[in-house]
Length: 380
Image 1 (cartoon, one colour):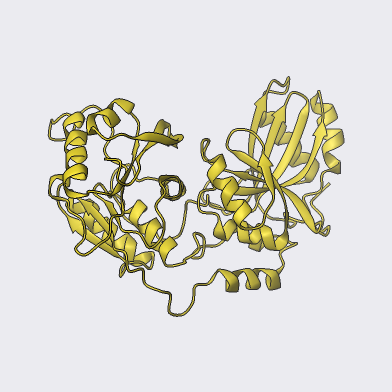
Image 2 (cartoon, helix red, strand yellow):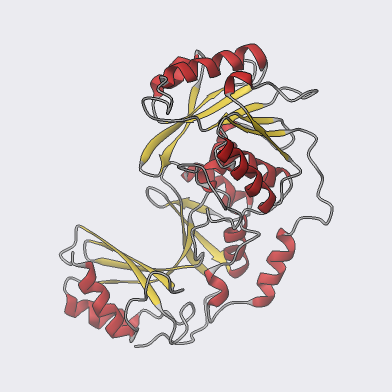
């Protein structure tokens, strides 16, 4: 049965996906939007959303990866049963006839472990074309198989939500914007407080801070998959866009935001990214080593928030423990009263700073487990 043009229900079940470890941060963001939610496993929260809430979640969530809509579920122990029962699942509200569809299928504890064979049958029953090429725009249907239960979810986001639309040249291993947003939230930094990042890389942390301080929605500069749905409501979307749009003259934060790095390429990338992100006037970009970092003039105590280098040794041959020890010394001697939040992969490096930190967040940066170690203001 090909996808039809069935009307979408007034309130749809949805799953908000995030990097594992960020569930509490994303749950708080959903609650702040007025969206009731509950845990739904590692890296997932379940909610029921109106069209307006679904559109708003995509635009306003800072730390989520994507928002999926539940399209239905069936139980099947064989391929024959799957073909018989999946015909009752209607993709019509979300997938227009003739639209290319890409599947992402995972199988857990099921006899039907051959995901390629599952996809083949789904395409045949739903009369979908062949799998599109990677560079072809397509609707994404996420299929999760757990024992005999098949759940079907349609992606409303399109590109992952960490694609804010401003990323250009980047230093090596840039931090995802969604993880950076969660770091800012978990650190305790608030808009209006000074922030210094002495290892800014491509500028993700200070740029996210600048956009938050300026009232710019995380997804305010990009497009979304839901705008191509048959059930898309243009009027509702226009209303969400209007509500998410910052004022014509957004207040400029008094507190300075400083992005600093010893690598000239990283500094140039940060400056260009800040310009594209609309916060070039709010983020001061400096070229220099952490050993020369100092608080902005006439600034109240604020936060050092950084994603310092990982690994065993620096490019020049120095040990990372020396770098972290120097960072701790600089924080104590030149930034009295400031909080310090460091995202790191090795807890031994936290000890090297000599700062009395506590872990406030455990998550992943790519394949690497990382922890956010925070020293409260005045504790150093």
